[in-house]
Length: 140
Image (cartoon, rainbow, N blue to C red; front, side, top):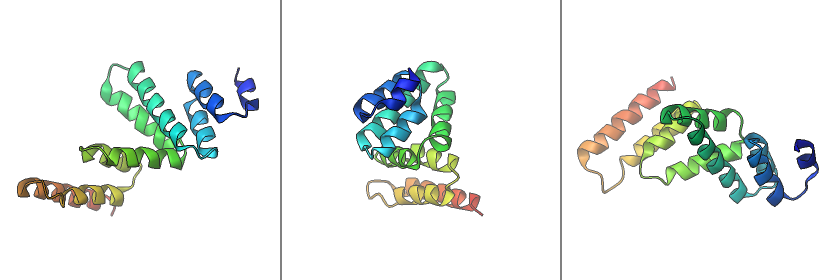
């Protein structure tokens, strides 16, 4: 089956077929080569669902998901996930992805940026800035 998929030229057929066989990194490579943002995002979401379905431990599933995205997926896949996580109200998801990728400066900036939200109270802003400072010190 995998040999037949190599010959397939249609991205719309190839990516879902690769996902159905569990070849998520290959599906990401095909979606990236086609420069298809929808299939890149689709592959990320399907892989996250797969990780969550294969383990009852949510933390272990999340670790597997983030670790694979960082180590085996394309940079476009990583940055698509990062941009998606930055739209979420909880900045910790984005921070965790960036820290796992050893991008402490970007993670610190994400935390510091939260402190400038006008809807956040002063004590909460100070917590974000303290966390940003701690993260920046990781990069030394």
